[in-house]
Image 1 (cartoon, helix red, strand yellow):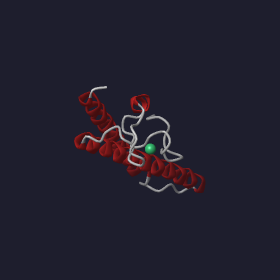
Image 2 (tube, helix red, strand yellow):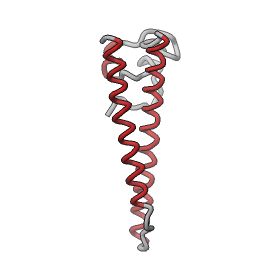
Image 3 (cartoon, rainbow, N blue to C red):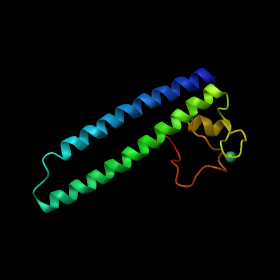
Image 4 (spheres, rainbow, N blue to C red):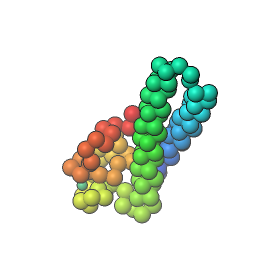
Length: 115
Ligand SMILES: [Zn+2]
């Protein structure tokens, strides 16, 4: 894939994620006001908050990954594993264009695919 295509793809993804964060924040504002009076409702509300927190953290992590990839494109180190320095397989970059790691160095628990 051409560098300009990768850059465009990363920027589009970044835009999607930023919009998603806005929606998460909006959902949270609606939920916290007013606080549910019923105990069962409160339990549901806490679960929703936790789910939103998790989603929020995941979206933030992906945004950081995208920013890192954009910086590496600028530095001309895009496609190199930031841990071992080996080239990341093109098939892997096709699926995970923002990844900073080759398949060997990828941290456990990292998202296997963008969605
Ligand atoms: Zn590596």
